[in-house]
Image: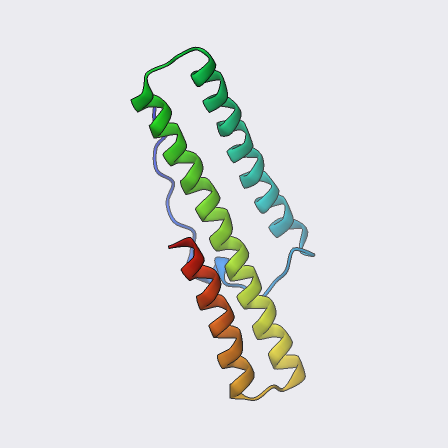
Length: 111
């Protein structure tokens, strides 16, 4: 049985310059990881029972989406941290370009 798609989170909330020191962000990431962990355990049980490959593949896709979503949250967290650090340090544009390059590299690895 597939789960209904969740509405995307507002961009402003996802991009807020916070870090994993923020209890709400930490709780959110841990919740997402635990959900993916549970989905993986479910896939293992499906395979042990010899269930239909199509159903197993659907669950793999769901786990991948959950992990991709969590990875995006972490990337946005990094962006927020870099922006906050740069604002405090009064960094010039070259540091911002470096930070954007780092984010681009991280996202490209997921493509």
